[in-house]
Image (cartoon, rainbow, N blue to C red; front, side, top):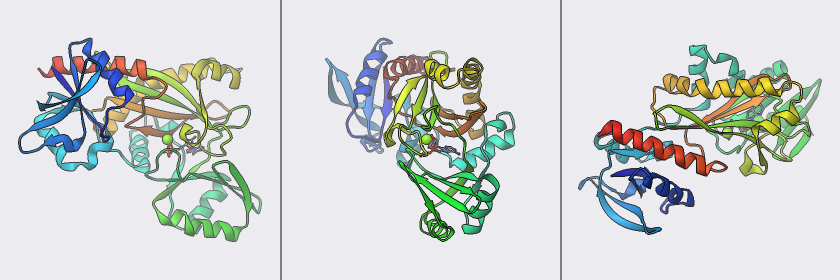
Length: 332
Ligand SMILES: Nc1ncnc2c1ncn2[C@@H]1O[C@H](COP(=O)(O)OP(=O)(O)O)[C@@H](O)[C@H]1O
Ligand SMILES: [Mg+2]
């Protein structure tokens, strides 16, 4: 039996190799392929299978189930093909602002939302800044913490932070920033959430989930991500580090770490089902990024439909292979 593993890279990664080994426990062979390895006419796939610890190319029929990520949705023909001849659990990514609206309309998790508006011009920026004093401007379809700025207003002084720097700027410079940066692509602003460590570094909690052997959501990891030396973002690729949840909370929230931990666990057990419901998608992987302010309130920074596997490879591979077994049993 094969399970397909489609990714937009040409070569299987180390994680793919680990996953192929864990799926083998269930007697399943992982068939790695790129969307362009699908022969749409012959209805076959040029896949790579792990044999004796080496990747071997083999032409196979379309597997019953394929693990697909949201990144592959730009290969429209191939996605339509898999829709028709196979089964997969993944969905198109949804712009940050649109997703927020869905959660707001639903209501149950609306208190996680950060006040957000879409950028239109300097006046809208100025009005939002006047109201909230500290705000963040981020691309509506951003990734990996790129292009995220913090803007602050203190009486008639303005401050702009980006990556490791913070500088004071004039109102005229702020106007220019609005025109030269924010007007260039679709930006939103949000109230700034002071999710920072005792030493002042921004952090968030990534709740990393996978569907398990019962087809239910399982938290594989609560990971604290710290943007060491960063002014705005906690994305580790921008420079940073990670920590386990409990020791991190004990140190940074000495008086109320227990209740924060309980809230995060409760969120991990309930929110993924709501995400599937409001997006009307069947998913199997999620990364939910939560900020925690000084008063211990939780806020939603972002939901990632194709989160990485770093810092949890072993657990992720185990849960994924149990899920593949569950799906094959269900589909066959
Ligand atoms: N409203 C906000 N207040 C404070 N920090 C924020 C806010 N929005 C984003 N951040 C920081 O920036 C990081 C990246 O933001 P995110 O929306 O996840 O963009 P990306 O898709 O680029 O990862 C977050 O993990 C968080 O550390
Ligand atoms: Mg993010």
